[in-house]
Image 1: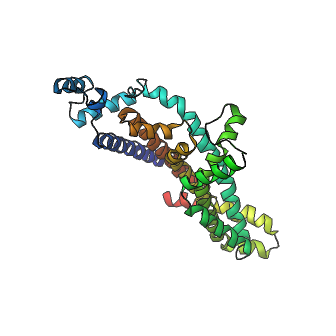
Image 2 (image 1 turned 135 degrees about the vertical axis):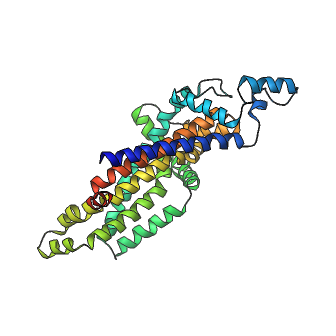
Image 3 (image 1 turned 180 degrees about the vertical axis):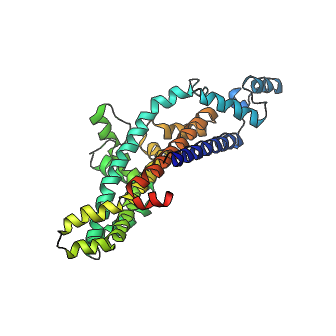
Length: 315
């Protein structure tokens, strides 16, 4: 087990290193010269002033040297200073990250509860109209893009019915829940469809096992069979997929936060890209990639604890 954890941690660090270089290089390969932006635009910009700005911000150095300097600063939690706001990038992220984290947590609760519940219901009622309704509803939910869902939810429940606010993140626990309900639902709809399908299929596979048939023949109530034998054996793929979907949601908040006017890291990333604020864009992208890699690694480590067959194969 310790050797497996060591291999996973080594892979995590190697992946983070490669991803950080790709992020740094890709941002600087984007259209636009950061030196021109730092100099205040092209109006009355002289070559001497441009070279001075490049030297001041080390933009005249080779890409590899700039990357090494940036990576070293990141390891010391120095993410640089925003070109647009002139504030520390770390302060901007710390101020906005709790809102995004609350949105992802809320959406995760929704898609786990509703998705797993719908999948269990479809598996138990397999072949009936209930199963068909769940499959049809989840197929429709998966086919609708998140920005379309956001607009539709805001128009119906926010504007017409007036049940929920359509902008802002709210204050306090109840205020935050009230403001983030529609964004979390828009973010969770596609994930809900995926989780319900995975749950349904995992329970169908677990229900076809020999020991389940033996339990039925022995007269054990169906509810106990579903809870103790089918659902328990299906937890491995269900938990794994829930973790992967939750990890990907951090990047998926960009569209939802923009649609609902939420001041999170997703909207911060959009603003940074539009204004060529490279330090902010690099830091936010690195945070998103780090969150995804860490969560997927944890899921990979937890999976053998839920499914002994995976543990035996790993050994």
